[in-house]
Each structure stands twice: as C-alpha cells, then as structure tokens.
Image (cartoon, rainbow, N blue to C red; front, side):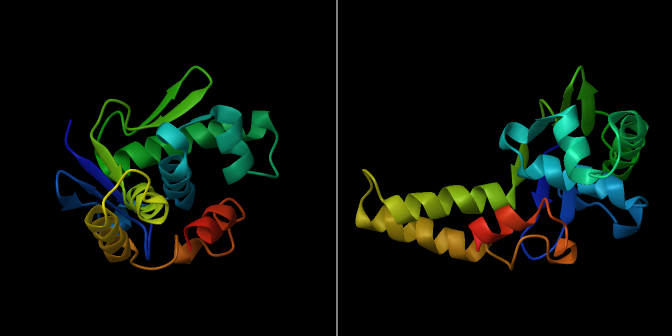
Length: 158
C-alpha cells in the first residue's frame, strides 16, 4: 500500500504515494468529512455511531448508516485505495495497515515535545519547536470553520 499523507492545517488535501488527490475527486462533501473526522481521531478509527453523530448529527442511525456506506465508497474512490475507508463491524477506519501521516497529529506531537521538554536537551526542544512551527500552515480545516466537530480540535491546535 502506498504512503498516504493527510493535510488538515491550512487546507484539506490528501496525497497517495506523493501524488495529490485532485480536488474534483471529492465529489461528495460527506466523503471528505468522513476522511477528515477519521484523520483527527486517535489511531484513525472511530465507532460507527461516533462518525454518524459527527457527520450526520440530525439523522437517526437507520437514516445515516446508508449515508456512511456511500461516503466511504466515495472516499475510497477519491483516494484511489481500496482500503482507504474501512467499515469493520462497528468500527470505521482510515487506511488501516497503511503508512499514514497526518500533519495535525505530527504538529501536535512536536508541539507537545517542545512545550514539555521532558528529558530532552535544549537543542531537541528547539528543533521540535521549529519543526512544529514549520508544519503549522494555518488553522485546522479553514473551509470547515462552521463544522461543530472541528471546533474543539481547531482551538486545541491553535
């Protein structure tokens, strides 16, 4: 499976094996929303009902499950990887088994190292701080400014 990189800071973008996924590939906004929500989740996985509550908050489970399946299909098609979004039992996973990097997660880890500095030399702390600042290309998902699911993480990362 190719290396996948998800950009969430300053914009939304996905690259697969170094090749950007074309914006026109995201034909359904809910497909992109599912990828974004999963990219922000610990381990890039959430319970199916958590995804539904975040992406389709006003829908019942019965109404939203078919929408989740459709969104997963369109996300797999956009990314071009058969296992890009996997529905396994009650879990929804983003690229299980693939080498995936998410800029927001990298930024968060580097910022944590720079701020705590626990067990690190001054040079390591400064390096982590510089790398974190270089990764911060802008606020989290600016095009999703009014999505409730993005607000807490946006504030945290800011």
